Image (cartoon, rainbow over the protein chains, first blue to last red):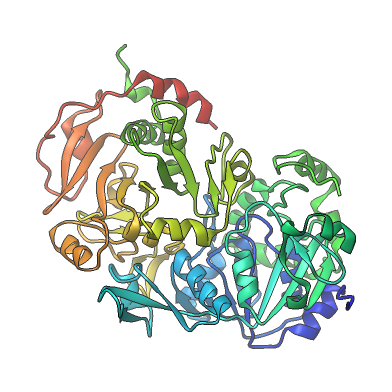
Length: 297
Length: 246
């Protein structure tokens, strides 16, 4: 078996090309902040980024001017408000968008995962959304004559995701809220995974039902504890809601946002620097916060 | 016991009225915010059988601290089941989830909801978050209840963008042809309950403590006096409010 552990720098440099379509995992939970920030640090240009419900990580990638196109169902800062960088880029027309719904994005990924070019669905046939999506077609069922929208496959070049643990071969174990993370990863040609902890293969074999992605699909594994901050990881640490609330104020102002990105992205050259920024008081608070049963491995 | 509903905040009043509407249902597709609060309130008081289902994949959840995302720790913690989003959207499309609660930035007289843009799509005044799962729920859920704070700016004749399709005579005809359920049937504000008719929303009833003038103030639709008596709610709902008061 091949040892797929890597540094975050090499994993991104060796797998991501300018112009790639990248699925980014995390549905409130397990958002791969530190791993995806490496795209910004390496200034990889003209990216397409996609997922169903996207939060402030998308805002940061858009603000960093490395994104050409966004394919999404939702882009915002949940409960707090809008994605201000997305709104600015949309109004300036500096990004292209393909706007779907959460269900249709997930079905698009599922179609790619299943290796078919579309899946029929009852959604996207009524209201202003269908006419707003270029090239969306309707099909008639050959058995019932019922009309369905033909939801086209979305096959990303690469998926960046975060999970609890993996062995060095790339067997990924994940639990808690998944959303569309596994679906999007398995739909993609390549998968890069950051984890809280690298564990032994024998530990994986003790509970193979926790493995959600098998090693042969994974390109690289990087151990990045706290790499999902300010989102959370079940069994490890809770969500920093305050960070999300403060980000709303920060991201309204482009100068403030630049210094935020300098601190949290450009100057955070390794995960230890990132942890230093979070700070020991906050780390303790989030470790004690709500995040399910503590991981004992 | 006479309840003075003015003692409660507008969002609490919406949750109070909505909780009563959930009696008899077994499963509810909810989003974060007022919909989640209302469903929790019903579960804690008048409908203990109700299973709360979030698009993140959490089923049988009961968040008792504030949740910012449908994937928040408070949603996952205490859930009976966590599956993936594809499964819950599949259940939704198969008609296996009874009722849904939605809110939006704008609503029109046929219950079309807008969470996409204020103004023109290409040159918007405000670019909002987009559909999320709202369009999907509005297309697919057999019973749809819309929850809106009584803010006249958000009530319009025709929405700037119909993210989530409404109902009424013309839309229902198209829904029938596509084998889709009938769409939004109830609208709840912090002062009243409205029901959908062929011609759009009708004022059904007003929350006790409020007047017709207050319940319709600034709404652009022509509304007749309520067809039913004032809304009074089960005191159990009011007692349970303290548990979701975060």
